[in-house]
Length: 100
Image 1 (spheres, rainbow, N blue to C red):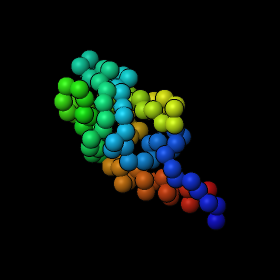
Image 2: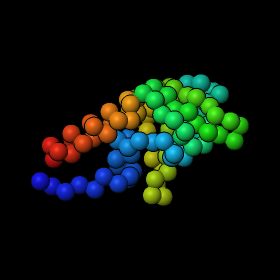
Image 3: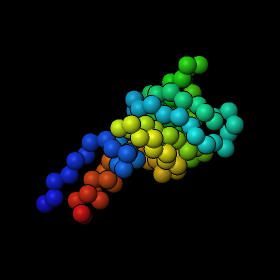
Image 4: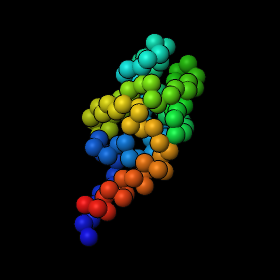
């Protein structure tokens, strides 16, 4: 069986729990959410709660594109690709890795 490194990297970011990561909304259908930035406090299946300088803001994943910085690289991900519970995304990733 092949050994895998599951550490947080730009290419496997969607499969990790995102709580605690710095994030910026790069695109949004809601003009009030554009350029929203801060740290993800809580992630649910469909939303992020982001701690900003102006308090905690809640945003739907589906209506935004998010930008994360991982290992010095900026990673943009459409929110619809993150629309799952964190533990389910981890399970999906683990199943894919077992097949490789």
